[in-house]
Length: 112
Image (cartoon, rainbow, N blue to C red; front, side):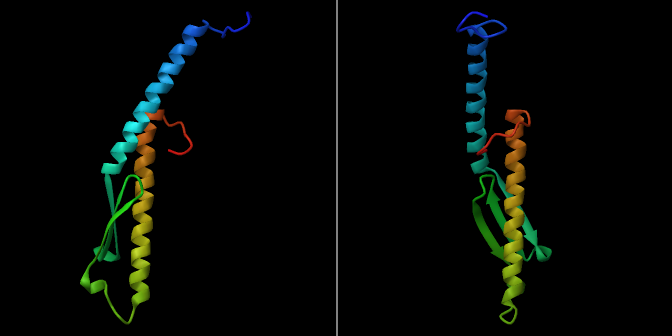
């Protein structure tokens, strides 16, 4: 093999691969921006606590129905908020993974 050459066609293949990588990077940036706009919603306790998060794992809102507020049982309310938040974040991760998988063909890319 000659020095400076790549197997299977030389620099043309390398340029083509770089173009594909750049396109994938651009597509991933687009998906990341779209994830900021997409929302997931998780409700627990029969709907008395609801948490809305973005696809980028940012909590947008927490809604607590009045019947969930019992001054004698604050621990239950804390547990409901925690459960709803964790479920919303899990759903956001699942959404992000699904959307990124469309771009990467299922290949895991660190940081995304």
